[in-house]
Figure 1 (cartoon, rainbow, N blue to C red):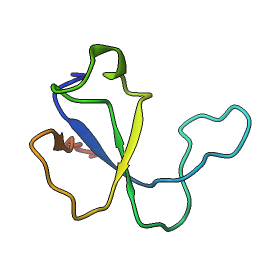
Figure 2 (figure 1 turned 30 degrees about the vertical axis):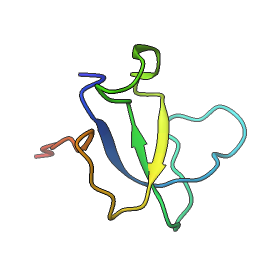
Figure 3 (figure 1 turned 120 degrees about the vertical axis):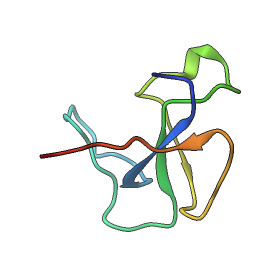
Length: 72
């Protein structure tokens, strides 16, 4: 699962609050969205769900995608 493509997340990119949190979210607004996981064209050491990067929402690339989730 890790390492195929960077995965788009719904969070805006920004600093997290200090301290330990579960499922942290970024700021309420911003100019770049969070990408997580790494991709096939990066070193294996960064292909993990905790790895975070950012891009503007209109960015498209061969190494960026999203995960479809069904919530009944």
